[in-house]
Length: 315
Image (cartoon, rainbow, N blue to C red; front, side, top):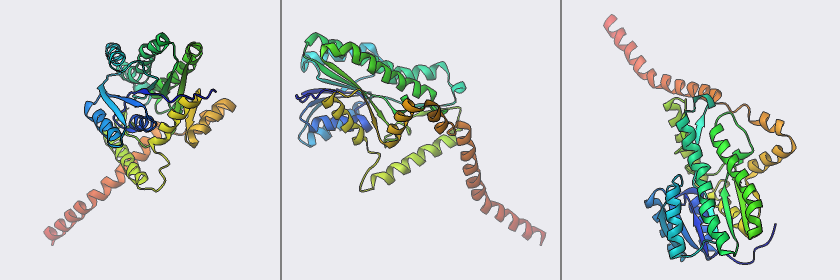
């Protein structure tokens, strides 16, 4: 760990149109950085820019599909021409594809790894090269997940993608370190974002998947009204700034992430046992019971009406 005295003046954040990316862009802007806000959705990127500017910060928005190497190349050329070399790159854009491994198709794997892993690879390559060529150091922050070291039976593709991000970060830390470039992997636990709501569940009943999204929305609404927000994206944003400041290698965020990280190092077997109960089959059964009871309750008034009608006819 090394303390970096200079504050970054130019920061680029991917997937900054919402959630962790937006909070991270705002946190760096609050520290005085000019933030380049990138997202696949131009409208949400501009909303983040407006929020930063509304608080006296400086920002500019760009559209970026992180799965496209050519778009990364084009953006890097624009950034160095209009702004110079970024001091900090934050690879945050991500999505989740959950479900049973045997239900995944090759397209599901391409989608998951294309965004979460290769999107990070492309960003590190083009902007890492600019940092090396400048010769003044820099920092790369990759948003991984506690799933990188906490296996579960319900989202193997997502876990593989995030484990790849963590390992990539540690490899690049060794390779780019001699150039004065730090690399950090941030590994959040459960955070209040839309990644689960917008995610894809393969091999799961559509109605159950929608119930899950509705439940996540209710949890978001409830936690947003609490005086202390224990799942706020700002926790990850502050961790990203702290990792840059202190050149930290791996930074778990929230208690469950730290616990998983510790158990992975101390007792990997116990770590697997702890999450083995969280299966798609068990979730499906619980969901079927809940849906079944609700459907039965919904049918009850109609059934009672039919009985009354038969009684009247019989009478």
